[in-house]
Image 1 (cartoon, rainbow, N blue to C red):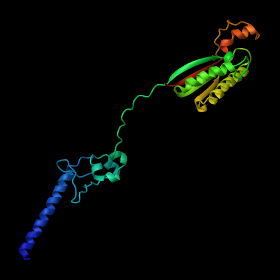
Image 2 (cartoon, one colour; image 1 turned 90 degrees about the horizontal axis):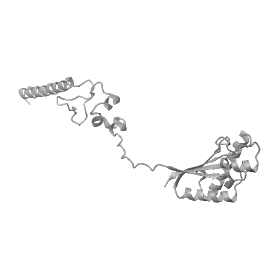
Image 3 (tube, helix red, strand yellow; image 1 turned 90 degrees about the vertical axis):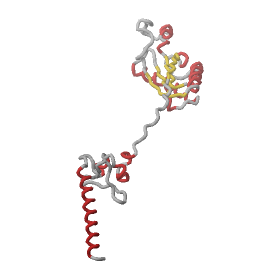
Image 4 (cartoon, rainbow, N blue to C red; image 1 turned 45 degrees about the horizontal axis):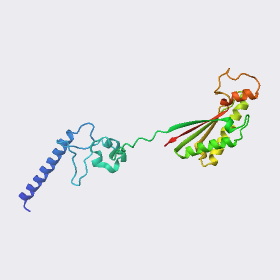
Amino acid sequence: MNRTAKNSMLALLAAATVGFGASLAQAQTSIPLDRVYVIDQRGEVVKSGTGLCWRTGFWTPAAAANDPAGCMCDKDLLPKEVCEPKVAAAPSAPAAKPTGDKITIAADALFDFDKATLRPEGKAKLDEVAAKAKAIKLEVIIAVGHTDRFGSDAYNQKLSEKRAAAVKTYLVSKGIDANRVYTEGKGKKNPVTKPDQCPGKAPTKKVIECLQPDRRVDIELIGTK
């Protein structure tokens, strides 16, 4: 190659280098402060010949996650949730609202006075409860025992709990899931009779009959039909 041709080629290479540097410098001068990639005058990211994005000196993975071009340029380096946001689930149909069916069973049908052993009449009533429970999509059965006013608070609390437990045991024997039967005793705290309705300090037959509504078990079925 003669000297003239060689000098011409060197001049062309120098001009190309200067031109690329000027273009890159021009692109860099237009970078907004919140961008970590070099962008040109059109607002597009400047890429190398191999398709890689040019990064500025402010580039970090955290900063790239906030750059609009971060997922395009460095998707593999960014957290998955940044570049692949979760798609909102389609609204589901409203769930059926549980409904309650409250049944009060008098203690004279379930138990003898001052007892917690189920009577045959009481078992027949509980068979009806079990049948109703199986006819619905059962959530829970709540059995709450009560007593009349005779006896101490502590004694009546235990008696009411034993009555509720007896109801649960029987329902479970009829195929009801034990985990769906909740029992509670209220003792003599929630009488149905009024204070002056059944006068008498002794548990005479007349007074016992009068207080019958207080000796009860409230059973509530909660579920959907």
